[in-house]
Length: 341
Image 1 (cartoon, rainbow, N blue to C red):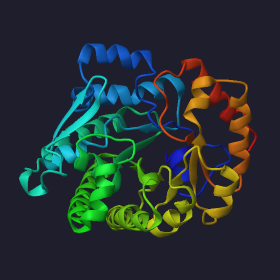
Image 2 (cartoon, helix red, strand yellow):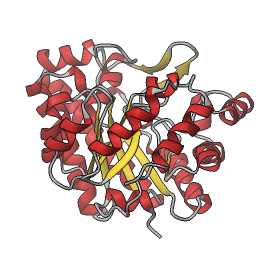
Image 3 (tube, rainbow, N blue to C red):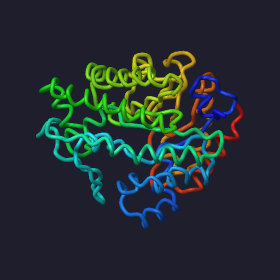
Image 4 (cartoon, helix red, strand yellow):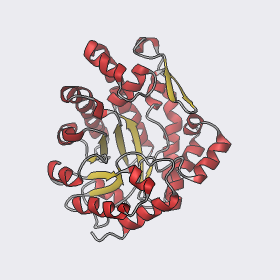
């Protein structure tokens, strides 16, 4: 049985709005924190297929979401391309050597790093309840490149943006490598059992319009086209966070099946501007879920009403905050499930 989420992504909603949350498998859950205390660091758990599958299923077991998002990280791709990857407590991920100082030629590709991720997908597909969609994912090329160039995350993606202006040919080589690798990686996830995949472009909003066309739309379009040829029945969700008024162009030109929307956009504007019938995903502010104020149910209704004329997957505008109380998530689920479509 395809399930409510997969049907909606394919443009055939059944009258109920499916629900899942970005980062729903993670630190806000006590069962996750307990497992991490036993297993160790984040990267060790991501490469431990049994642990990663357990984490992927934890929010399904607790909340009954309509989709299970693979527990992994967007930096698996640069790790497989040969950069050293570690997650430091209080500092976030670190990649070396930085490509602002080095080149891809200095790296040794290791595609075996994908195999534990594929095994996680296989295990989850076997264990998921019927009708729950298995979601794979990868980072989009621009966002992944910002980490590979700088060796870490940054607020304004200064190093990658500067490289794009100073030496676009050098950045193009990096982007091309990520595109090819991402096609391989997502194809592997789909072959392992992922029923839909999402491309996360968390830093798409840092680019000016011309650069957005070159470094966000064009690379994502290449990935989507390749996946459509290999896996024509697998929907791709594109999530260009911070894209603002550039979102309609992204929706039209990348070929994605559905578009994720961040919390900064008015859902009524999105509903007007996206192509007719295109499934949309989003877009509750994660901080509103954290606050859990009386505004929560009101905003849920606003979002649901705005997107009532098209296939809609309810989600947050970005990942769930690790401090979010469990009872706030339960309130959100009740508000979505009880809303009259």
